[in-house]
Length: 196
Image: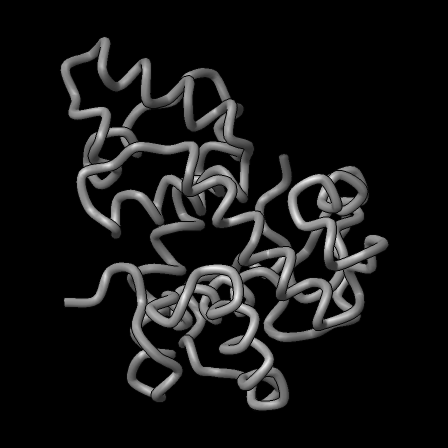
């Protein structure tokens, strides 16, 4: 796996002005899928990390749109969210609705001690695959770490990814939840998964 193509995490994080065009849509789809207490700031931070709010973004490996769906994942999404119709990752409404629905599907398949740990595992699964997170959880438990805690526990073990893939995967939830989510919370986008 390549390092995330927007991956210069050293640059100062600011909310792109393009995000404003999608704010009400983001809030609406998050609440449809997750309810009124949806962690909108988390989802906004995820889109920021994925595409910097560019609906025409295409990564070097072929991921497309605001949520950077790979073609195979986009084709599979109607099994999770059939009401959104044919896959169309470059359509902002389709991309945002399917991203938060996919996060929900992943979230239901991980077990964690806190909402922050759970969302970190969800994001790691979105980025690198649920199977890898499940293998990391088992390895963490076998090494005496708490398998229900991401931070400093599951995040510290690698069940076999390449160094580059592991580095990207561990940086993904960290940047979204600790760097970008607070920006969106402060800007009034709503709550996040790790606030408080």
